[in-house]
Image (cartoon, rainbow, N blue to C red; front, top):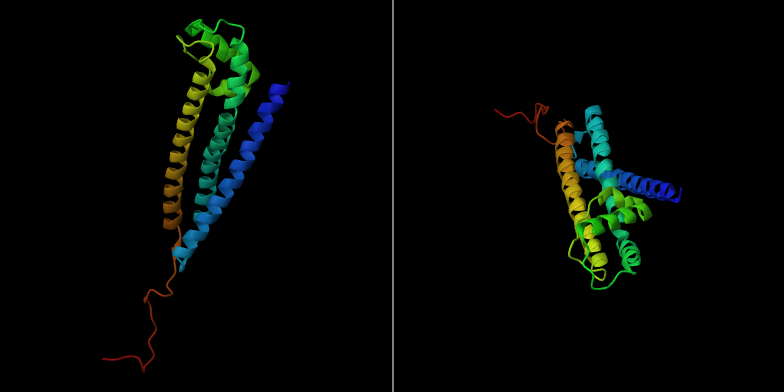
Length: 188
């Protein structure tokens, strides 16, 4: 039951942080667009695009927050793995089955890690090197995972900003169109 609450609390925390960061980012985006295009006004379609953008960015921001949480488990994972292999001979070479058994046991103790690391082949490592190797691999994988979602987040932010700008109405003030001349200003 503790694992369930651990997953639930981390998931809700990542979701809340992701939503708050996204709300701030989308709000800032609308502010910047309004600052750059002073004479444009947002239409209902602009706000609909903003809402869809908010949902998409929230998803990626929450996933990024969750992945950062997983990265924080690296030291715990390494400590647990060292505990699992502590009784083994320090010079013994571990097989792929041994490393898979270690990752499965780690998934029982750290269920969030199990979601990202369900298969392990660290054959040839010794009990003294397996924990650091698994932690390094987990950190490397999480860095790639975060980078992938950051790139998707930036892509959707740029596309969303472009779509929001395209859905604004252009104001006539300051553009020189439809200027009304008085008789004294007219010149032939």
